[in-house]
Length: 313
Image: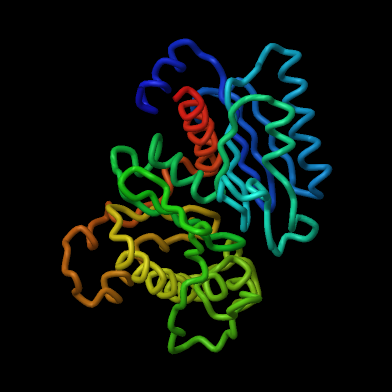
């Protein structure tokens, strides 16, 4: 039985899935069968592991009393996280810069309280899956989701499957050349001037002295041009290595006015005519996220669906 046939049967019968997007800033929990079919939700700030996970567990307890019991759950978590299922720390956050969260078992407490199959992956891989099922990549089998916000991260779906290796992809840390007019040293604590270090939200705020959403006039125009230049430089590597059918840009910074067309133009420039595919110049190649802020929790529902499907084999 395919994943899609399992989902179709469940949507007709209306049993619930739980999707948990555990972000570095906030946690978003959905109970439902899709992003437009939620019976309950929870949005809370990400504080300490004990307080945050405790609130999620309390939410499920309250929903159980109301008769809303999921048959499977998915967790799409900020990271880095351990994704090797045979590893003793599978489901843990590892060496995150988020204070207090390094070494936190995210999967274990949720699996213990729900006692159902639970899927686990990164927040950006979850968002990619959500966009692939319901959003801007629906109908495609090879695409990349790149989120640009407090950090930069990416998830790749290749031939219908999220790409995993010994660890998840770290697209935000690919090397990028320095813009000729930029003397900002970079924000990344590990690499300084990688893609995240030069083009994340905090990098924009440090460089221009104000958050991206507050820029206006000539400063906004200059910031958009520089941001597009760096994103295109990172996307050049991603396009050459993964050859996606589409690139989806999400996150708060991706909503800067004029950024999307500027990235498209800059990408064509940096590709330099190679490999010369007309698809790379199409307005359908680099696109905004179709699900917006629901991409992560929707992807967590897909992870729940996968976990239920795997448990039935």
